[in-house]
Length: 381
Image 1 (cartoon, one colour):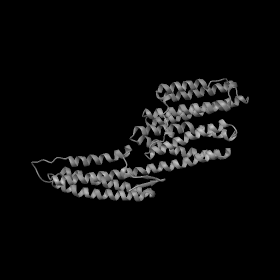
Image 2 (image 1 turned 90 degrees about the horizontal axis):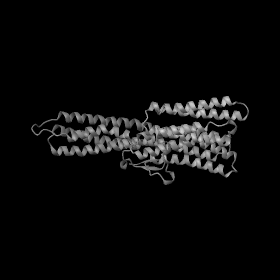
Image 3 (image 1 turned 45 degrees about the vertical axis):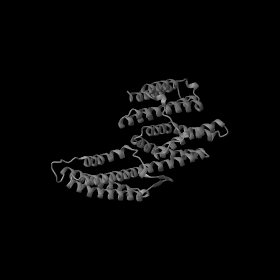
Image 4 (image 1 turned 30 degrees about the vertical axis):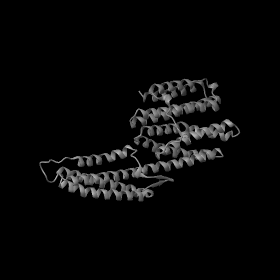
């Protein structure tokens, strides 16, 4: 039995358990089966084993629950319906066989042949249930791959855009699709058993967060100045970073090795809370400049890129610290507030250059910016 997802042949019969959700779902059944087959009857008394009968009943009920849930998944995912139904039939077959043999053993718990037959049936049942759970997990894999396909199409449209209007239109769609992909990747990251795969997804998500806004800025600059080599080089560099990050998510999701050209690394410059504090302190310092020295074409993208790098590192640091969900949400809110404060400050600098603002207004925006970075620091105290 194999499943084809966007041309990928995936055989759950040869697959390993890759997620904690599959492991946790399987653990209770494993415990019950293990208890049943290791239950040692008394040599002094022969007859029925009430404990064994109870364990058998629990195993039968658990197997039925697996089949019911898998049936719901099959109904909601017609692309995988046939594979799921085939796996469900195997679970039912091995479950029925296990029920018959284990009941016979429960009625005669001192019989070694019956115990051995039950052990063989139990192993077959666990194998078939494991395959069913792994196949059900492929539903999540399929959702991520569909999301990846959308983002890949968006990136190609952005790369091929021939006007600012086209670029903005395609980037808006990219913004929606990349948020969806990032959310899928985040859930997958937390569910993966393999630590290296978790880190690869975290690095990919961090790269996407850091470079998505840069992609728009670099693409706009290229469309305005296609004759400048550095404009094309910068656009292509940022584009390749986003594309490679999406490629890493695709490889990890499918359990494939990551090509050397797509290898990403976690931002090691922000590996501790102290690193983040120093980065924010330095950022507070560099945004304080004489308004007369502000050059929008040079300084704006530099500050935006630097802040996105800090925010990306802050998000990855929160992940590495196993931050609670509610606190992580507050960190995201504070990061967005810092982003907005920077935009307000940059706009004020621009107004000043047009003689539509004053030193007092610029200083007020600088103070507001520093207040927001201070609020972000507090989330890590």
